Amino acid sequence: MLKLGVLASDRGSNLEAIIQNIESGRLSAEIRVVISDHPDAQALERARQYGIEAIYLPPGSHKTNLDPKAEEGYVTCLQEHQVELVILAGFMRILMNHFLISFQGRIMNIHPALLPSFSGLEAQKQALKYGAKYTGCTVHFVTDEIDGGPIITQAVVPVLPGDTVESLSERILKEEHRIYAEAIRLYSEGRLKVEGRQVIINDK
Image (cartoon, helix red, strand yellow):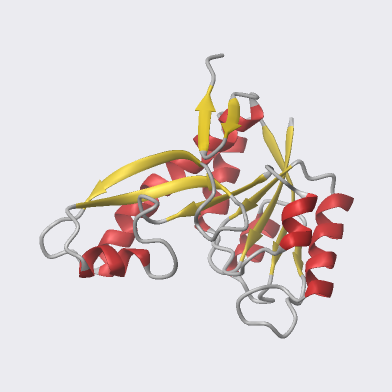
């Protein structure tokens, strides 16, 4: 059974979707720990409701990434919980070298756009601003290039007339819940192989 560690900064709706997939038997995995950089993150409460260990670890003074000492604490915590795959579920900090080396090829993130389009913050707002007819979400492996790691899977979401950031975000989120669990399942089955920037999905 695949051992997961989840990092989240806010609501943790993707976390809950993963938990539900595990509990239903659709995903053979176990969440060993949920860590947040915010002490009052809803994700921590969601985890505790399911009996999952939930920990707040101070991120340090930097706004966009973890301080080196804080990052070391995150890595140590994940290793102590024997985490095999790290899942970023709305974790709003950039991971630096120590983290990336410690879990090389074993960190996944989900982004609310069809990468490489609309990377960075406020992806839904970007899509509306540029008049995109379609957007969506992307699950990718995390590298030192922000939102630039090898793409595992994507889902397309149409941009409808009259869409707001909120309405578009809600439809994208439904697809996020579906494809994130699918990407984790493929990883747990050993079916993902990275060749350069491409992720090959092998048959069972």
